[in-house]
Amino acid sequence: MLAWFSENTLLLGLAALDGLSYAATVFMVAVGLNLVFGVLRILNVAHGSLFAIGGYVAATLGLFIASHGLPAWLSLPALLLAAVLTGALLGPVIERLLLRRVENQEPVLQLLVTFALFMILEDLQKLVWGVQPVVSDAPVRLLGTVDVPFGTDVIPFTAYQLFVLPGVAVVTLLGLVWFLRRTLAGRMIVAVTEDREAARAMGIDAARVTLLTFSAGAALAALGGALASPTASLVPGVGAQTIVLSFAVVATAGLGRVEGAAVTALLIGLGRAFAVYFEPELEVVIPYIIMVAVLLVRPQGLFGVLETRRI
Amino acid sequence: MRRAGEVLLVLLAAALVLVVAWTVPWLRFVLTIALAKGLAVLGILLLLRAGQVSFGHALYLAFAAYAIAFGAARVPETLLLLPLAAIGAALLGLLVGLFVVRYREIFFGMLNLALSMVFYSLLEKFYSITHGTDGIRLPPTTFAGQVLDPETQGWAMLCLALLLSILFAVLVRIYLASPIGQALAGIKTREARLEFMGISGRRVLLSAYVLSTLMAGCGGAVLAMTTRHVTPALSYWTASGELVFIAILGGSGSVAGPFLGAVAYELTRVYAAALVADAWQMVLGAVLLLVILFAPGGLWGMGRALVGRRRQA
Image (tube, chains in turn yellow, cyan):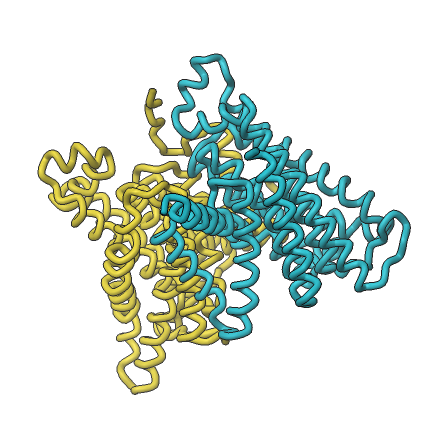
């Protein structure tokens, strides 16, 4: 066992670094999904499409900057701009025009509304950005690589994946925790999540909170997409892949705390990265195996709170 | 009197399917596919009655389809393969069901989704057995040892699909009217009340789940023998979403809904793909939105409302 570890230090190190940067993007998507589910009680199937659109917008901005000879460092804030644009433009439109209309419908119908939206957005992406892979890796090239010492070996790893991705994820996590627990708007979101009726009775404008939360969730998904876009080329179907993965994260974490999504994203991100290096056949299966294993032991998820049974 | 009317309606619908397939030959294939999917959707309807959505029923459809694909390479006999594949899917359903019926709502939906995605990646990754995303081509299957010419084969598959559809629609009707079917609806309203009456909600849901997987298996088997090509995409999560889509499109109020929905879905898809090749998915999405926003009862509900209005007038 020990011998195996010392033989594979390099691979283990690579897998850990890869897993960390992967977990960062997964977290951004899953935490938004969790937030939206908490307030709207809708599992947003189109959340993955917002991830993809965020990525495409970021890539478009990146290519625009490169082709107009603007300074390369601009491509970093462009990632953030892409997320804000996507969240601020699409979020309110989707919430107001679609989700609000089915507010009082059966949960199945609400879920299907987001599925319809997913189908529409999926084709919209193909119409706007085509089916050829879109690549814009300016931020990765800009920051270069860092040599990470690992035992006796050294792993060259891109600084972007090492610092920017996990960094933004940690800032998002801390920012969200602070926002939800310490600010008035955040506490309103928590109140509506806990009990919509009671929150409204206290004078909270639930409709506004819903709009705000959905837009924030959309922006988080888009930010995840924007951050991931420089590390991989964008192809049709990336939204469909992302959404099932974040479903797995959300179900494994259970619905509730933001930190839960972070820990679970890390678990699943690392699990997948180790699979990529050691058992490539299992790569796609690992998140679901983790999810099924967790739900077998804890039916409400790792961090979920057991709902009291209504009689 | 009512029952006689219903029997007449079913016979009329079946005759209509055959007449349409005879007058417009290319529709025969589309109708067979629609009925096969309708069978799987009937299972979704059953679970919807319990208030549960499975976002992973494509698993059973794909399982049966691949079972047919592997079986047809050895014994290409329809009447042997079909029951075997369907029973195989139902056994898998029983195994999975024992686990997933402990969960409700999004956990139920997500577990089903997860398992179907696991199956999807197994199909995709084990290239040596499944040929990955290329899929497997099937030889034509025989009927009771008879090798049929392509034309007769097409008719045989359509009649088989039609027969299975009627059989299972009747079975589901009987099931839903039975005490256990009534208890199933109880899971949606208040499961705790069921338990107070001494009925196990899990067992009731399990019975519906296994029946739904049996039907998905039949659907998958017919699908595989009709298209004669199976790929892992059959079990991707969007395929499961499609089944739920059809259930809502057709309306969950009647066992006729799934078949009505499936025919409408396949026709829309064929025409949308012909008119706007790059945006057929968008057209379907828009149709789904319109149905949910303006006709939550689905096509069946719409038809009923029309008939009801005429009777009142």
